[in-house]
Figure 1: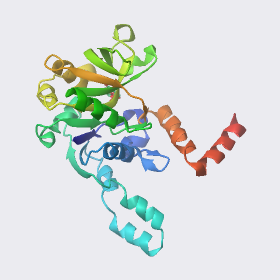
Figure 2: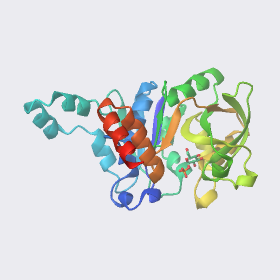
Figure 3: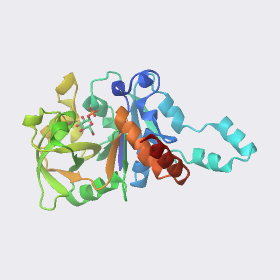
Figure 4: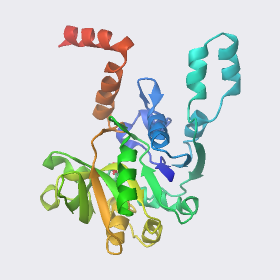
Length: 283
Ligand code: G1P
């Protein structure tokens, strides 16, 4: 299975930082968000990745390219652990890049993955969202994809008043885990939302999604919405949602970035105690 990581957006929710640095390079402790995303894909068995960037976001490519001079410097100064960490970036996956010429939304971005997918199913991981859990979130989706042979989207429950920020599904489930979709809508008004189960940044699509994307007009916020293409695909094929067991963090949002950083830092033994001390003093 191949994976696509859309990473072309402006990152307006994280300005001014994102004026010159891609939001996908925001660090969670010491690794950029998109590295976690690539690692989630690799841990889920993906070895072929397409990252969709836009002009000015070439530093994303630089992050995954080897930096031989730096490696030599670390080697000669005996910094073996750092050297290993550097060499592990993107290990085991082949990464290619394509420029999104016009920033016309997530659906517009995914159109650039059509020839990469080459008629095969494809996983999609949003480049500014990290996940955590006992098993990689994408692998949860892939298991359901293999069982159902149909497109699958990750969902999570949010408080009803927050649904307007997301794609929202209408589905039925007998186990409260896998939902068969009846419909979905992008960023509805709270009172019109079919549920409080929202699309959570990971997808696996059958190849027919690209036909639907090609004929999807601009929708919410004047952008081509992948949610709209999915709704069309649903008329032709069954589609499922998985209420993920892992958790999703949106690093493109300032408060969420702060909380994610803390959560990940608290898991690191070297930072846990100083952080806990800090909060004791300041609360
Ligand atoms: C995108 C999708 C939306 C989804 C969200 C989180 O919205 O369009 O359906 O719920 O990601 O995965 P964005 O956050 O880019 O506005």
